[in-house]
Each structure stands twice: as structure tokens, then as C-alpha cells.
Length: 185
Image 1 (cartoon, rainbow, N blue to C red):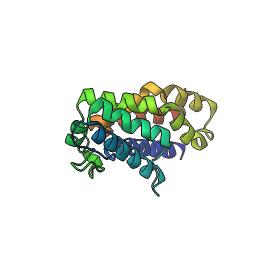
Image 2 (tube, one colour; image 1 turned 180 degrees about the vertical axis):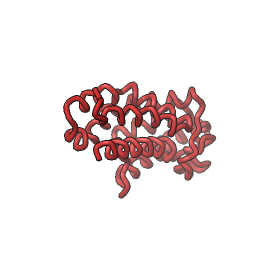
Image 3 (cartoon, one colour; image 1 turned 120 degrees about the vertical axis):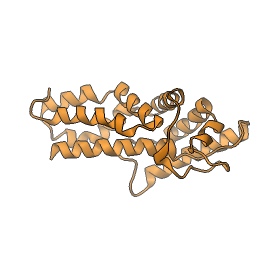
């Protein structure tokens, strides 16, 4: 049961990330007005996801974090590239197909860098998993602390933004699974 809960939480994390990256809105030329509109649309898309009935899984992003992410991804990746990736439509709206996000390695890293600078990934994930983790023995909790690091979360997001959520999640889920088995520690 413990293994199932944590694996499910990991899957929710991966879906959250894909939704944050691909669910943003905006687009147009690189003039300041379009950049502001794109950043605002991305921020609104992140907040809409947070407030939806399905939620954003274990990643919690407040308005400040959403605004930071929207502005940062527009600044680092650019409106034209975000439109190319389908994150933004031509009329600066949220892209429709968030499941097919496939950024270049450079843009994926830049996007993950922005997310990590705007959201405390490690604390957010650990807080979301606290109720499940609290039921684990101390050895397993210690193992999870070693696995769920800012660096590990950053790596997951890079892969998701590159269009490889299974690759990203595979290593993380395996590590989480190892933590909740009797030989964890």
C-alpha cells in the first residue's frame, strides 16, 4: 500500500510538470507587450491548473511562483520558441496539447532552471507527500529525503520539458520504490 501511494504521487508529479510546462499561454512577436501577455497567460494557466478539480498533483505553485515562472520562461525561452513548442498559440493563449511538449535540451534546462528559481521544488513535493511519508518507518523516510532533492526534481523537470516524462519518472519512481521496500535505507 505504501508503495502504491508513493508511486501514484510520483505519477501525479510528472503530470503536474507536463501541465505547467505545456499548459501555459501566450505568444506573438518578441515585443514587450507580447512578452507581458505571454507571461500573464502562462501564469494564469498555472493558477488555473492549481485551482482545477484535478489539481496539480503534489507540486504547489502560488500566484507569485506562477507569475515568476511565466515571466522567466518567456524571458529565457522566448515567445516565438514557446509558440513553436505549442506552449503558446499564435494569439497568445494556452497551448492545447500539453502531452507532446518537446523542447530542445537547452530550452528544457532553461525552463527547469526558471521553475526551480520560482518554486521550492523539494519542499513542495515533500510537503505534498508528508501524509504518506509520515506513515513510513524512519529508515524509509530518511531514504526519501535522500531521493527527493532539489537536484533530482530539477532533473525530472528537464526531462519532462524535453518530452521524456517516462524517462524522468522512471528513475524517480524506481528510487521511491526502493525507499519503501523492506530493504530501504
